[in-house]
Each structure stands twice: as structure tokens, then as C-alpha cells.
Image 1 (cartoon, rainbow, N blue to C red):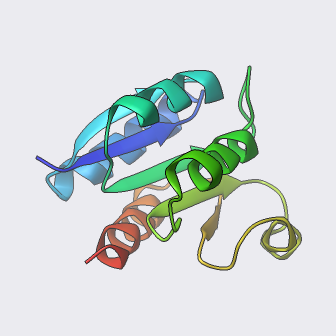
Image 2: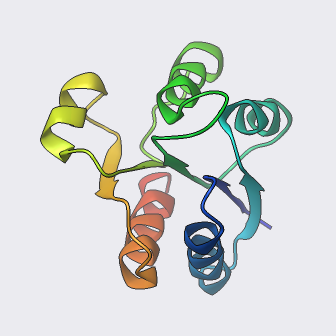
Length: 121
């Protein structure tokens, strides 16, 4: 079964993303900080990855750096959630990365996850 990785410390948002993944038949792993996410990425393969930019122990940007440097990932299947202005964040990250406003609305998350999953096809 394809897997979804949720990297975030807010249990409400993580739960909403997990429900969105279930609707897409994705098994979900949850990391509550950047270091845990990197450990999971070392050990597994994910159809889509949702990362909160603001994480304890190692930021979401650190996880993105790991993906680029160690995995060589193209990042089309990665969604970065942030409360910062997306245009400002876009200047810091590559163009193929999806950026969405941090939200608890499942519909927006599900749409972003669906888009990330389709990007790999």
C-alpha cells in the first residue's frame, strides 16, 4: 500500500491529513518533529509528504534540505504547510514544491495531497 508521511506537531492537523490520506487509500506515518521525519525518510518511501514548516528539533526547511541533498527528491510529491506568505516562502524553496497555508480544513489538505500523489504518476 502506498504511504503518506505527515510531518507536524499539531495533532488536529495531522489527524485531518491522515483522514485525507485514508480517502486516497494511503497508509499514513506521522512524525512530530524534523528529526523523526528524517529517520522515517531514511527507512521508507512515500507517495506524498506533508511538512509543517515550523517544527520542533529540526524545521520543515531542514527536512526539505535532507530530501534534496540525501534523497535527490524532485519534491513534486511534497507539500509544505506554512503560516508565512507563500510568495516569500517560494523565494526560499524550489518551484516544484507545493506550498499551502496551514489549515485544519480537510478539503484543502485532501486536494493538496491528491495533487501531490498525481504528480508522481
